[in-house]
Length: 265
Image (cartoon, rainbow, N blue to C red; front, top):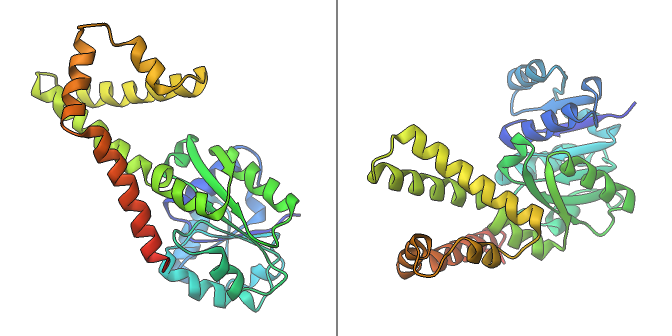
């Protein structure tokens, strides 16, 4: 029977666990969760119907150890599990490099970094997967299987993972700001708040689905809804004049620069 140990079962760790259970990739009896305290471990285990790990010793026999904790907690977890010589470790901690993970673990441990995002909790995530030096093709396939159950995934270089972290990892935050701003605009012109939020969210969801399903460039789809001298192009012109495109580009760039600084690059 497979054994999986998850350190940290918060928003993202919980999304991974829930998604894999729902898709039938894992069985509840195979899963152990470890939190910052025994009480928290028991609470999370009870919530998901899985086992609680008290000291992380399951890492010795686990087929996979997932690190879903904050970056500042990772060094302590690595120290805790390294003595058990885990076979495979998958980390979703931001700005914790493959070199630092591999350097703190036994030489034979296979390591993969993943940058998921919060829409994974509703099965619409985007995950970047960066294999370490020792990661086997089988381990990479396992990571792909896990994150394709939560949305879409792509196997990339570690630098591309950092870049995607600034785009898709932080992207839901940008999208929520845009939805909120569009909803405010709806209220400004007279719509009820609840309806404005629903309309803004559904419009972005539908537009994103069109990009993904048609394979057309966003600019081509934009051209299809902008009649010469029409209302839509007037709205786009006002947004472009006030710098919406540059603001979004600068935001992604600033996010990557912050990530690099955190990683000491």
